[in-house]
Picture (spheres, rainbow, N blue to C red):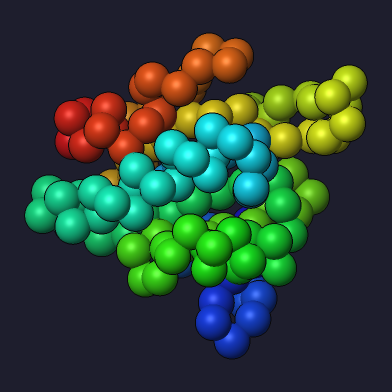
Length: 149
């Protein structure tokens, strides 16, 4: 699928096979950029522990949200993600739907979003998937994913 990656030069199209299909990749998804748990705990945990992920052979850490690339870029700058985490925008939620991990938050004024989850893919094959219970923040946090490696 084609998604958008936030870069210092602006949004860039990214192919999921290229982004997720080579090496060991950790992808974690959040319901929304700039939301409380996502900004205070989820993304910061992966940024902080990025060196430990690299030490365990992880080639790339990717943060996914059903937001546009401009929002993901601004959030990455705000959180000082730098090169530690690739900020991936699933603007229309097509990738999230294809995974079967969409979350309907229309009643809360947020529309279609992603469930909070984390996965590890090795050469395009998912070897670990952890999906949070509604409102949870345990199995997809950076520390839990690091332990699963």
